[in-house]
Every structure is written in structure tokens, then in C-alpha cells.
Length: 617
Image (cartoon, rainbow, N blue to C red):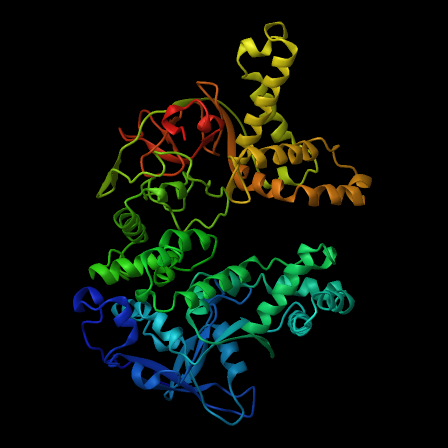
């Protein structure tokens, strides 16, 4: 059987708004409707084992609108096993053999009707993947393709690991969510869904590859209607989110903890958040600048979905561009696109384009806060974030803490060099261990935090350490101030995503003392209800501690300031506030590093509110 060959798509030629002068808004309205896309007609069969046969259709957007379903799936195995996508299945397309991945083959077999055709848009078939120019055009229009579909079908994969139990649990939770009475809803949930095996299955379902890929964010966010399919069971997106809402309430009320804590639905909730933001955006051209500022910026979406996977590292940017309001506004206003879709570019060039756009559009350098010394792309300059790095920690530090941080940047980018206005604050003098995930498995201060505290005590000023140098009440005041400084360092002065003030500091100190004073773990202690209660009481504190410390190293500066820095921080590193960045950065200077040095990442010191004049409120 001969191999299938594509007929080129008919196009108006000047599809790029850079060339045509159309704004993104006008472009997405398809004013003339003359752009052409391919669709497939999935032919019916009464036999599930019969070979899959499809016909390729050519339609303009104007004629195809809401006349097809778009498929959202992953090319890799549905459980995320890399390499499986290199093994091909095949279908018949217009009478010719056509190779597709096994996961797509399973999806088509599931979607095929017994007696009726089904019209679908599927990227693997409807885009000529060998034609880079066509890929550029079609990826640039992905928002339109999914936005114009009458429905998007989410394919999670074939039934496995008792996924049917997970789907039935979701349906059941969605049913009880319809209870009018709040208490009745929780009572029904706790009465009907005590089978832990269902919750284990749901936890595995939410770990499937689809929930953690980058492209699905846009596909999910812009479509009108969604249905989720796993094996031969399905659930609407509306019912899915009703089920997730019930899970959230059960967790909030600490009901059925052995069940609900087996399920991590954070990826599901993040997708729904983007979906709500896109729906609220509506006709953004009719909204004021202040209203548009509440929508996601490009830095927002890149940060929120940084931990998601993409087979092509360029897609960590391309898949999210149209969800960014500042990108849309800039392109519409200037007809200039600083991040054109171009798969012929290297990944490094694409990420360089992002940094240039962020500086040009915002006149700020906040993207420096997302730089890490450890990176996948060794040739990428240290001042450009490596978005292909999917590690969550260290989390970016939060807060408009200084006049320097809230000012516009005085900077420019030339080739692979960033020039910015900055000043030398201090140097790192002594460092301690790096905080890891195991430090949060202890019900009391872990060995790492104990060493941090010991280092902080060892570097108090000599006059303060001598008991005879202070009156008793002054000694007590000093110890209290030192405890505050250490605590503020551990939290980077932030709890519940808000800056600590005098009131929250007092309550946080109480939570810290409760958390730190607990006895080392024992079998009986871990099993006690009191220990669980203590953990719940200090949940906000523990969350804030993890966000600030995980993946960071404790240090003391030459001036005696207590601080947090990236894991790669070493004695002698330079602490640098940069104009236009909310949180300062650590830079390595020295022989072999070039005259500009190498950016390591963010740092924080407790004196930012106090004696450091360059950061005073």
C-alpha cells in the first residue's frame, strides 16, 4: 500500500499579523475565513477489531466552524512513558497507509462510532509534521482551532490501574455536589465513598501524562465544551470540576483524610483556573488597561506551568503565548511579534526571544527571579530562564519589598549579554546545608534546620552574645529580635502569599514555636491524634516554610545578615540588588566567569526591612 502524501493547505499568504497589520483580535475573528485546515472523517465500523479508516477533508475556517471535534491527547504513552511514541501503529488515510502513535490509535478506536462518521481535528494527522513552515502556521492558529471546535475530547488513555473505579468515583462525587444543602452534600460524600481503593485509583488517574503536559493547557482553556474519556467511560468537564470541588471541601474540613489525601488534584485545578481566566477575558479590547492587568501575563503562565512536560522544549513557550494578555496586547498594539512561532530556531533562541519580550513589554527584569544555575541548556546565558527545566523548587520568592524592586529597569539586551543597573550589597561569608524535601517529613525541626539555627546563633554580634554585656531584660529583648530575624529569614517574610506585618508576625512566631518544639518522631507519636492536630494547626506555616526554603541554602553575609540563597550559593558570592527586579540576585564573580559574572538565582536577607538603606521602605 502506497504511503500517504499531503496536499498543501491553501492559505492567504500573509497569515502573520506582523505582515498583514491585523491585530490578534481581528486575526482570531477570521475576517475573511479563507484560511484552510484539514479535518479527518473517522469512518464507522461495527467491529472494534476492524482496521481504522479515515478520509482527509479540506475546509476553510469559515465553513468548518463548530462542525468538528478537536482531540486533546498526548503523543507519548498515556502513562507518560517516553520512547513509546517511537513505536508506530497505522491507519488507512484516503486509501493509503498512515503511521500514528499507539495512544492516538487507541483513541480513534474508542471514538469510532458503530454507524456514523465522526469529524475530528487531530494535530498528528491534520498537520504535515514534516513541513516546518506549515507547522509554524498551524501552531500559531492553535487557539483558533480549539476555540472554533464544537467540543474538545480529552483522551486520557485506555483503562488501566482500575481507572474505571476512578471514573465512577468522579461521577458519584459530581452527583452529591448537586445537593442543595451543604451539610447534606458532605454527609452523602462521607457515607458513600469510603472505599480507599477508589481513591487510590483516582490518585493514579490524575497522575496520567495528559494532566502534566504543556500543550493541553491552551487546548483546555480556549475550547467551549470539554469531555474527558478514559477507556470506555467519560465525564463532562463541568461534572469533573464539581467532583474536584467536593474533594476540596472534604480536605478543608479534614473529612476522610485517609481517602482525600491520596489525590493530588492541583494540576486539574490549575487547568480550570486558566479556563476561567480565558472565559473572563472575553472581548479584552473593550476592557481598560487596569482590567486587563488582572489577566495572566506571559511570565505568569510560564511560571505556573513550568513543571509541565513538553517533548519539544520550544513548546514550553509556544503552547502558552496566546494565554498571555500582555503578549496579545503588545502584538495587537504594535503589529510586532517578538516571539514568532518558528521551529527552525534553536531552543536557546526562543528563550532569548522571551527574555527580550519581557524586558521590552514591561520595562522590568523580574524574569531574573526565575533563573537557576542548574539548567538543561548549558549554552543558555545564566540571565535567561531555562523554561525546559521542569523542577518546581526552588519556588520564586514573592514580594514588592523595595523601592529598587518596584522601579523600572535600566537595562538592555545585546546578543547574549544583559546590561543592567545594579549595586553591590554584600558578600556571602558562611553557608549551611541545602533544604530538601526530607526536611519536611520531620514533625519537629529537622537536622538541617537545627544546623541553620546553630549557624545563626554563632554569628550574633559578640557584644550581644556575652551575658554580662546586656541587662537581663535587654538580653531577653535581643533574643526575641534574633528569633524574629531567623524566622523571617526562614519564611522570606511571606505567609499565605502576603508580606508579614506586625500582627501576622506575632501569630507566625507562635506557630513556629509550636512546630519547632515538638519531640522527634516516634512510632507512637506519629500515630497520635495530637500530632495530626499539631500539623493541621501549623499548616500555613509549614506551607510558607516549604515555599521559601526548599532547594535553598542558609547563609550569613559579611555584614552578619541572615539569608537564603540558591543551593549553589558559596562563600564569596556577591549579593546584588538589580533595578527592576523585586527580589535581588546572587552572582558568582571570579576568574573564568567573565567580567559580568554568572547569575545564580534569588537571595533573601532578614535585614531588608531594617538597616539596609538601599531597601528601606
